[in-house]
Image 1 (cartoon, rainbow over the protein chains, first blue to last red):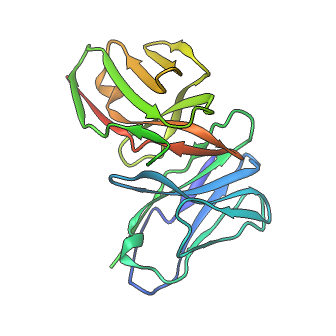
Image 2 (tube, each protein chain N blue to C red):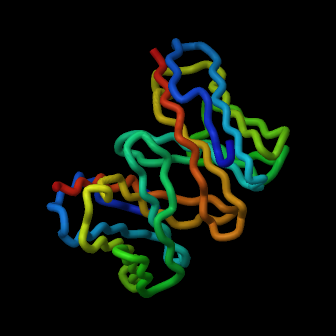
Length: 112
Length: 110
């Protein structure tokens, strides 16, 4: 499928478990981003990547790990999930032309 | 303090009304302003962008920037039920990053 996809779309996990959220884009965009969206906070940047093997922290990186070995994939791992990480997670990509970011459909994560 | 502030609403208006959505920003270096629309349980999508000051019109939508007051507005004319969504303003932070407002939830009542 063309575009940007996220998996899983819904996930329930327990406190302390490791969880990986997947993001895949087919445009060969150089930039990719992970956000979380919570009521009252809006979209907050967790991590971003300017290219394969280049990643950097955003506003709320604690508790999260990213990697980008291939341009098209940008997985986000919660090493030891906590209830405060219950949120909707969005992946986005950008071709670095007009600042426009293209968002995936989101992953709704619940940590019990 | 967030760099882009937005009234979260919710805002409900009757179909056909003119809608005004607003944001303020704190960084006078911001030059590029964007409006994203997010339908329920979907990812945001770019609706409009403007550069520097002035107005930009696209169909029923008009984006306006007033740099003297650091105010960003989105006007929707002849509002339709399909316009019901959350609208987020955003501005680039550099290195392709964006800073977003918290979003205003809009409902158009048929």
